[in-house]
Amino acid sequence: MGFRSLRLGKFCAVVAVMALAGCSKAPSPVNPSPAGPTRVVTHGTGAPVGLLVGAGDIGFCGPPGASGAEATGRLLDRLEGTVFTAGDNAYASGSAEDFRRCYEPAWGRHRARTRPAPGNHEYNSGGGPYFDYFGANAGPVPAGYYSYDLGPWRIISLNSEVSSGPGSAQGDWLRQELSSNPSTCTAVYWHRPLFSSGSHGDNPDMRELWRTLYASNVDVVINGHDHIYERFAPQDPDGRFEPARGIREFIVGTGGASLYGFPSAHANSEIRAAVWGVAVFTLFDGGYRWEFTPVEGQTFQDSGSAVCH
Image 1: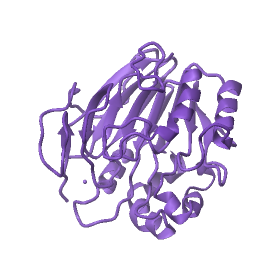
Image 2 (image 1 turned 45 degrees about the vertical axis):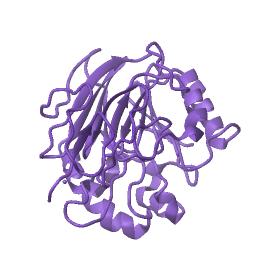
Image 3 (image 1 turned 135 degrees about the vertical axis):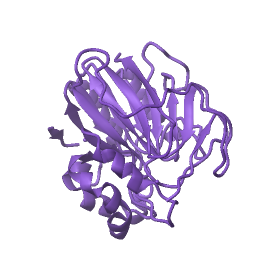
């Protein structure tokens, strides 16, 4: 895998179709998928060419039952592939001690195959311990954005905690990256989502990056920040439903930190849940399959497939 420079205790889970608060039960989620065991499924266009697994908002230290990080780490133990993180890897400040105490026991054994993205909590300590912990896998310092290949797929990890607006170094790099490395299928992940039904809500400062991704026919965006799972229908950068070439966004802030509710349902939100777990993206030549796998003791799942643009 070649990199290119400048790339549950007691569980509390809530599935939601409406606003949620605290740890209470609710009706089944919108468009629920059948529960079942995790599998690497051959589906779509030929045999799988890659597997991308992970979540964001992970290493949370707290009293028994307050964190799901060790349970999500056990999910990774039985999943092959490349591990992504969608930021806020180590709470509460992304310090070296936070990584040692809160991330390492849960996800640290998978560090060699992890391709991370930073979150706002990493920058509470200036970002240095994040780069020190993940080393070269975190991309160049201090940029923290990079790209790599999984089979014919181009995978890009961005940094929502540095400038990404018009004229930014990250924006310029992304345009160059996409134009110089055209690919039929592309997935991009970072921390703070442009669209979210969670407590944090939308992050409009990420729209410029979305415009660049949309212009280059990117297929999938994966984020964290809100401690929820949410899947959106394909959208354009202004949040309009666009089935032909819109980007499908997944929020997977379910790696272990305390879970959030849903103040409202966002336009084009297809399914929402507050439960710890990981997302599994099985990549094919020309398409992909997604599957959300919850921690042991929980039953919510979501799965589906799509072809690339």
